[in-house]
Length: 192
Length: 272
Image (cartoon, rainbow over all chains, first blue to last red; front, side):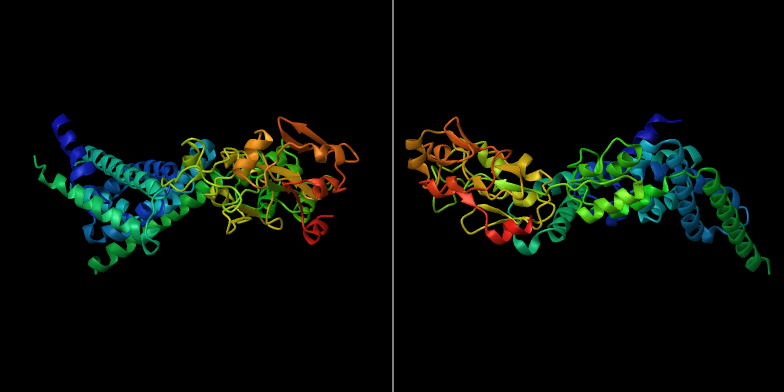
């Protein structure tokens, strides 16, 4: 375990290669669930949770099943299957054993089953070692959470501002998203 | 041949394993829910207004089954719905009188002037923070429509004078407007009451006259005129006790500033 490498992964995943603002993955929940900070927070935690757990499972399946049979090219199909199944399974378990957690994450869990950000992080992870892939997935989720919270904060303030009628709602959200993405491009200068 | 068979077999295998796993898990981790919960929840309005004091309609449905809530707790549901829920629960249901939100101010832009020009955020809550809002009468309606925005049922609209008008057909007496108004101008009143005081000013008559042409000047004419003594003068404001009031209407006829309002007959009969 190299602490420096973990830090590099963290900064890279949260800022430089932020999944929403640099890689443009997972834009659907980014615009859909960013109207209120509260739901954005729940969604973010749900994404962290799903990304971490599904990257553990997909890494194992990829390295021990797909590579063994020399069918690495099937990973996209397999990963979708694996992620959808694991999220369903986790949802059942949470619902049984922790109703408060189910109520907090419940509505958002099924939303992320086939989210491209989750699929993206698991595919990126296949080349790494097991431990680092989990860490990378976790911090990718944190980056997702950060972008979602920033966006929801801005959109909550937008509600109070006199936005031109033709730009109200989603159009102004797109403008905001592009400006945020431009700002995150500034982190590209950070190279280790 | 292997090139073709391995991927097919692997994927099929994975699919079967996952499918069987999920099927087993669904059996093992199933949560037993009360069948009545779904039925009751489907009947409830589903707006999650929170007027019942529970977190959303599903919370209220759970409360009903546990017996911690009563059917009347949902102020939004109509009588028909209440009866159906009572049927599901197997309890008897009593009628409940409909209530509506009533605004206690009649000083629109034309009748009550401003004391300064306000150009901040168009929200009553923000405007109220600056010297009690731009209206010359500090008790009066600011008119930026916080109540209109908070109403989940679209029952409140702002008229041309900048005053909210409650649509009594749509109003469910959920109490959101009562809570949001910074001047506390709304109250929930039984819908069968015809007369209401449209003023909340506690100022003396002279001051009221200076800022508004339809304010209550505490002249006590209504108090004297009321045959059943339902009106009391409290802190320079006439207040109707709706437990006594029986829609005689003397107060409306004697009020010199017309700060007591009468509901239209058509609207009033609807609730009887």
